[in-house]
Image 1 (cartoon, rainbow, N blue to C red):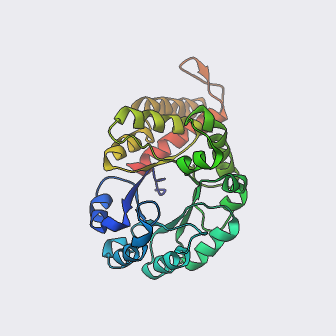
Image 2 (cartoon, rainbow, N blue to C red):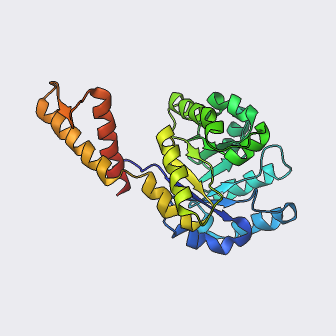
Amino acid sequence: MQTPIARSYLFAPATRIERVPKALASGADAVIVDLEDAVAPGDKRSARDAIARSAQCAESVFVRINGPDTEWFEDDLKLCSELGVLGIVVPKSETSEQIRHAGSRARPGAILLPLIETAVGYANMAKVGATPGVQRLVFGSIDFQLDLGITGERDELLFFRSGMVLASTLAQLQPPVDGVTVDIENVERVRDDTLYAKRLGFGGKLCIHPKQIGTVNQCFSPSAEEMSWAKRVVEAAGAANGGAVQVDGKMIDRPVLVRAQAILTSQRASS
């Protein structure tokens, strides 16, 4: 069985390291212990020390380090190397050299997740995505809006989200991960944002609260209707033995069959 693609990435602040076991048991497909936005400048060192003392962090979590342009970057990488974390989330990723350097400091096989949060990072996505160790690109939509002076979240970012999906496909990466929904209590907003990202070709989403996980996982999993359709397509194509076939009044060609097979495969992987 193939390894399922992570649908949900839950942030846990490094300053509250006691939350990591709960985060790992929350149902999130992946947990990111955050050394960047969730930690004040004066707490960076103590936050690293807390991660180093946490047995749950070794080989089980991603760590979002501080950006390459900060004074904490190298110390964060040293921590990740010593602890042997599952992977490293690199904020403000802008060059292949930055990602390659992070990978050189990580354990063999560690996953690299570049956060695309700036105009420069977006312009260099192809090279960043082609860097060895990169599994998928992550959209830091809030910081990206700030960098470009964009105030809207949907149509205003459509071009950039679509570009990220295209770059990921060309680099043969897993589908990209969409940014956070800051409205924690509004489940319907989380659902709407996730389904929108899914329609555009994203395959996962960053989460800032456990309340968001169930909705995100559900949205990125095939629905009952999609499963039923996929089974009918595959069965009809098999019965036709290469001949022309229709399902629900529509012709089934190879791209449609491949999509149906992918739906069934993804369901088996996540079950």
